[in-house]
Each structure stands twice: as structure tokens, then as C-alpha cells.
Length: 122
Image (cartoon, rainbow, N blue to C red):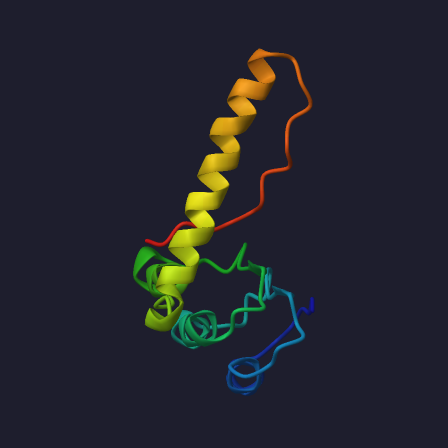
């Protein structure tokens, strides 16, 4: 979604809708000089609740640190479900075993096994 000439009221409605929207992956509000920093700060709430947005364009908005830091602080902060910790740790252990096995296979110039993509728990 790319737009220019947005006003504060437009952004307020967009922010409210984006909190639960699960289809938009790219949101670019760059170069909308009519936006105030306080309204753009509402995107911190969006980034804290919406996991589908992969890109948020904020260039040329003349934001200062106090306005942009709440947005950046909310990116990627979701607690890992406690009931899935054991399964995730088991998957990490399997992945690490494949990596070690691949080191030996590589040393003996044999084909390596595909390494599954598994996120670490932090």
C-alpha cells in the first residue's frame, strides 16, 4: 500500500484497521509531509499486534528519535507460547545435529543434508 497526501485522520483510520488486518505485507507512508509525528507513533501499536507486515516505509517523514523508537521497539516482540517451548527446543536440537552431520559430510566431500529453517527462542 503506497499513498501520498495522507492526513492525520486518514492515518488514524488506517492504524485502527491494520491492527487486525492479516493480508497487507507492505505499508509505505513515506513522503507524506502532512503527517504529524504523534499520529505516526500509532504504528507502534500496529507493529506490536500485526505479524503479517513485513515492510513499513517511513522515509521522508521528518520523524525524530522519540517518534520512531516506539515503532522500532515494538517490532518482533511477541512472547513464545510456553506450551510450544519443548517442541521448539527439540526442533533446534535436530537442526543442530544436521549441521554437525553436514560438517562431517562436507569434510568427506559427500552431499549434505538440507538444514531446516528453525528460529531460536530468545
